[in-house]
Amino acid sequence: METKKYYNVADIMELIKISNEFIERNRKVYERLAAGIPTQEILDALIPELFSLYGNYVMQIVQYKTSLSRITLAVLTSSDYGPTAHTPIYRQRQDIAEKYNNQYGADTLIIVEYRYEPVHNPKVHSSVTDMIRKGNVIWEKEENT
Picture 1 (cartoon, rainbow, N blue to C red):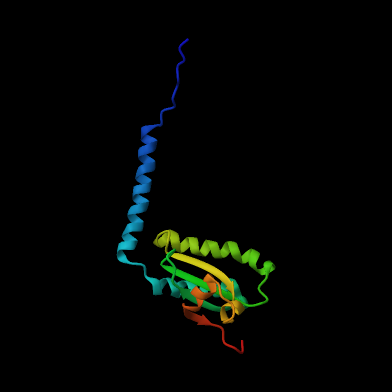
Picture 2 (cartoon, helix red, strand yellow):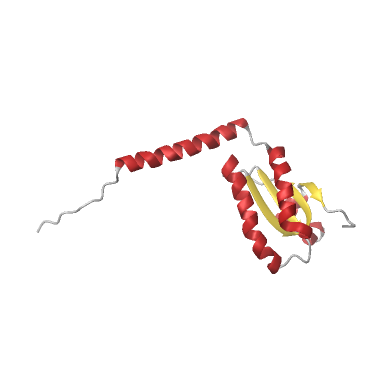
């Protein structure tokens, strides 16, 4: 008994359309990358967004180096920043990072949040706290505010 196999054939026109969409999207990303990532311009726009999002919870913003992105920021939060504050902020923070990554390329920006106290306690050592300590403070809350 002979069995026949039937295969679904993809619509070639649909495949061409999808391929062209990817080519166009990648072309735009590569043009931006060739022009260079305007790091300071991104930071100038991003910092006010982070202030607006975190409010009084933000103690410090540090830019540090990783191999994962061109711009890596740590938002160091106050001790009263807990789950009730984190939950609504988390998704909005991800949306902000996604906006810049869509505009300038997938590995442009990573934003992490970390507690202020462990980073500034020299007795605490972890790969994250040590990387953040080596970074550049780009904003710091004034002591009396």
